[in-house]
Amino acid sequence: MDDDRTRPLSGRVAVVTGASHEIGAAMAEELARRGAAVAIAHHGAPELAAAVADRIGAAGGRAIEVDADLSIVDDNRRLVQRVVEELGRLDIFVANAGLTRWAPFLDVDEATWDTVVDLNLKGSYFGAQAAARQMIEQGNGGRIVFSSSVTGTLAIANASAYAVTKAGLQHMARVLALELGAHAITVNALAIGATVNERNLAEDPEYAEHWAGVLPSGRAGTTGDVAAALGFLVSPAAAQVTGHTLTVDGGWSGTGVTP
Image (cartoon, rainbow, N blue to C red; front, top):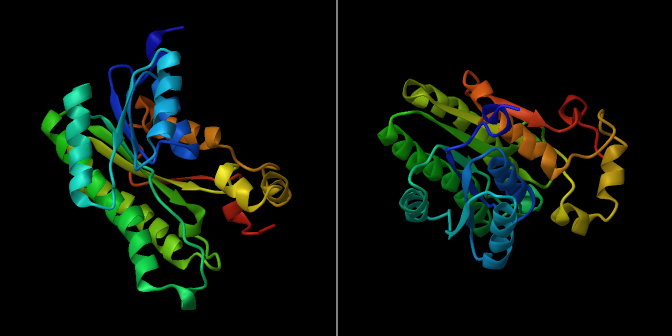
């Protein structure tokens, strides 16, 4: 099979934030399988990040690990600088780092709000800005993708701060697509639905079974499902897809039924 088909990202450099585990790790490994050199951005998780890098290396890929607190604007800039210094360029930026704080709206305090917004929204915004500046300087376009959530579209109780940030990321993709289109940079978002991962299984050991009963697809999503959708958005096949939110939820947003 032609190498351009099996490794369409060969020669490209990607950053995935929040890539030390779960969805972010699956994203990093998927981009590496498609031929990209990958920077695994994490905050305070060196062993997990090293394990992801080791898996990529064992499969014949190239990866580096970068520790950065992406709620801090300067750390986003240092992240991009480090990637360019070590890998030579930047073509793909995946703003996946984020966190959830569950609480009724009336109980959310300022500190909780600031923590969620500073990483999920501000961090993604200034990470994309630093990446776009580098892509524009290179002069040959690029791809930016935000990890959003179906909670950015459907109202879910006790997730108000988180949901607002995820809705913001979807609109951020639209407005940045408008401003960056002239530079051949596409900007999109992934609206991620119920996905089997360690965090969700810790909260509900029967998470997969419970969600399988209400999803039109008949099963909960996997980290691989999300990574595959990302692979499309950053591929040559998606050159005309921008300002779009691709939903990966097994059809759940069409029903909104919860377990």
